[in-house]
Image 1 (tube, helix red, strand yellow):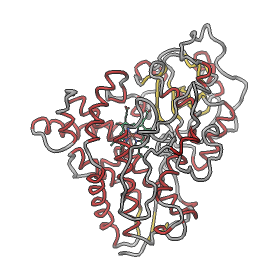
Image 2 (image 1 turned 120 degrees about the vertical axis):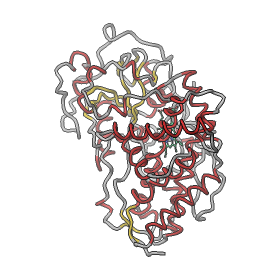
Image 3 (image 1 turned 90 degrees about the horizontal axis):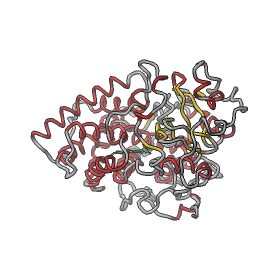
Image 4 (image 1 turned 135 degrees about the vertical axis):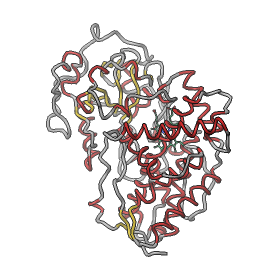
Length: 488
Ligand code: HEM
């Protein structure tokens, strides 16, 4: 079996906007990776299981990974405090704590240290000292995501549920509702097929018109002030506005919806209430559309030949809203941050040397909106990246770390040069569906183009060093983007 090198995949068109110079003139959009999926490979960790065969259980297997390496001194790392952990999780004696509020500004160094210390698959402790594996190797992420026979999405097989403290802040991130996210095989294909068909009904030009009119409205609301905070006033509400239009949601309080959906992906204390509010709103919408179908995506899902029940539609629309809202907002925010702080985008945003498309592409490599993802549970004992993973172990995809794996990107700084083999959209059966990637791209592209068109002298209102990332180990997005501009 040959193994394509992702560095050579850049020649393969997979849908990033090539140039955004002509503001508001969007070329034909192609779907990410439709012709250029990230490489499937079994090298690296999977070298250990070239055929993906299950291995003997821990009792008969070799020791669970390196024990000697201390991670004392590494950011967020110190030995576990749980006395019960050592016996059940020997490899986690040197585990790294994943700080709930994220690795902060030193993110690249944080993941590099973990990789240097532990290799491509590292023992980590989530909040409450709950054990998991962080998969930082590009090849290992691709292998795990692409091998559903060994790694699935059903969290009921998790072997650490008894270690989860009551009112665990990550409950909403790890404990999945019965949505398409939690299914595998034919059951997943049925639900995802319906969602993909429905998302695919929306033509890029229609979505673009919807996004442009939302962007105009948001800019109108803030333009007179000559100052704005772009995350709350622009990047976050815009995807919610477009989603509300697509799904036929009441547009009474889209800011609250956007906030709830962001809370849900960031984890934390407010996530449970956020889920309850979003779920109640969607249940009402689904009931109404079942009684009286309209020209919207909820109605299309209810009448899809897959024959989804109401509760399935509620869960899948919710999963899709959660999967789409914050990442799209952060793609917009992270791109604007890059353009406003990096000299390569020059003095004049609209006339900079590198385009907004370059910035959007770079963000997907360097600051992917989902930096870590609660990803899969091992179905069997298996060896991965030099580690023995036991049946029921939880694996976290370190998408940000995998994107900067030296094997995939020997020189992570600098332009990705048209290489779209990043893992920002995941990989395998559960990757972000292609129509969803197209939707995200259309919204983000339009958001940036319209903003630069309407406010061409936009600049940061604070020093770049004063910008902060949202405190989350899961999402990657700027907390606030204060800007000033000449009112149009
Ligand atoms: C920049 C924006 C986005 C990013 C970075 C992103 C990224 C991702 C990632 C990493 C996954 C999970 C892959 C896995 O579990 O292996 C995912 C799944 C998903 N995304 Fe996106 N996404 C984005 C926008 C959207 C949008 C706008 C929508 C909907 C319109 C959407 C719908 C979905 C759905 C339904 C799934 C679940 C697929 C499944 O489990 O089978 N995403 N996305």
